[in-house]
Image 1: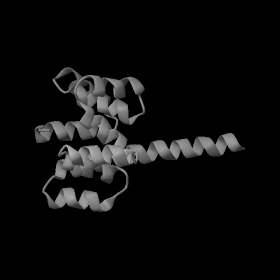
Image 2: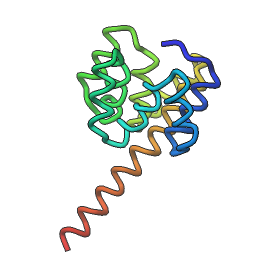
Image 3: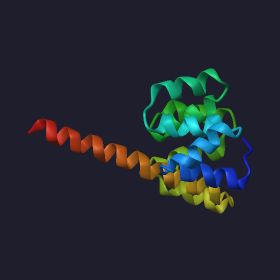
Image 4: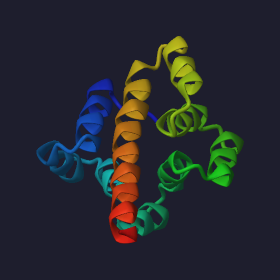
Length: 135
């Protein structure tokens, strides 16, 4: 999985919620990255698109971020070691982020941290909704 550094930086911004950059990714040859942003937000149609259009590694990244051990094993089995560490880092594993930095993969480490922020916010929002519904 080779992307220019500027595309990875743009993807990080799209993950963080920059809709203009996400749209740019979608219309400039990187629809899989734009749709991964949607998949991270639990959009089922985006998840299906990733699988149907030759990007199971990105869906495994999303699932791995959510703690899916089988997805992490799949990434490792097929040699997506950086993506495995991105998924682990996004799932609050600081050692995985350190491994990415040590391997001079700053862009991937940044993506892990951006996904972590989004996933933790989604979880916090869901927990808040559960607290409200119990009252």
